[in-house]
Length: 419
Ligand SMILES: [Zn+2]
Image (cartoon, rainbow, N blue to C red; front, side, top):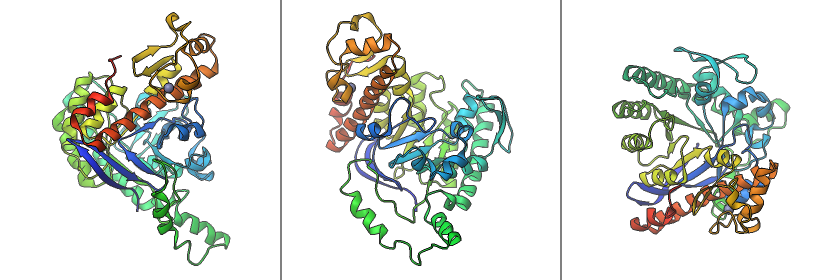
């Protein structure tokens, strides 16, 4: 009882679907804003809802170090802690351990690492990474993997891929034994009620039907009443470096273990974009067509359209939020740097085709002034626009797929000049 996935329309490899999670039904392909430490930087949760964010991503590594998963668990998991009623996905912590922490040591058991915050020593194993993600309580959680560095030789890529496969099996075993420990689960509710003497004999037997009725009337991604029998879903991750054959083997081994969805990890780690595309395309051939497929950590607006066109259903990237904080805006006219002097007297909106609240209200001149003055509002407004642009781009991709017109797909969704 976790996620279910339904494909409503497709063109070539691209598909428009619905991913039903415990907290929300997502329209796919979906872009997931990154909320690293239980915060999409500079944007409050009500604004994310208004922008149409259906699901956000949290980083287990960061939340494990601060504030610590036990605090989040006691607050009802991330949903309760950050007051976000829609869907959440957490990564396994593997990528951040490999990219941020110091003095890491990897062996069969797991990874010993030092915190980038205070140098304290910690261990992530597949089991402890799953325990952390269960306590955080996201709708979708990820198997603990090793992100292979780039470049790497074939021997190294193979050893790393095989470790990820063994860790995937351990992640699944631990998850299946402990999934009812999730802070919002029916069973953990009942255990609490039994221990406190308040357990009802038959807890909310009508809830499932009510859930189905309410879902049909909601906007995309809106929170729905949760089925009391639902729990988290664990997705597997395909690794294998930049080697197509190792990627095929990784996909087959991960599918053999069996997950309700699959991610392609270990890309956008410094390799050329053509190689990313080649690996994505070849890996997709070995993943089940009727299950959700998640490409981790990409990309530019052009890339998310391109990957959706190949048949990717879920994507996340820090680019729209991080670029915004550096004064870079994605627009229908290409990428612009708002700090440039040429915007100083420009009374026009950041993007004349954008319907977001920033473009409806403020000028490029004002945004440039805020950025030059180092005002906090610059980060807020730039980020809201960039997220609106990404989410709107994905909305147009979904619309285009539902129209079923291949020729219009890439032409209209991404007709803007390349930045
Ligand atoms: Zn805008």
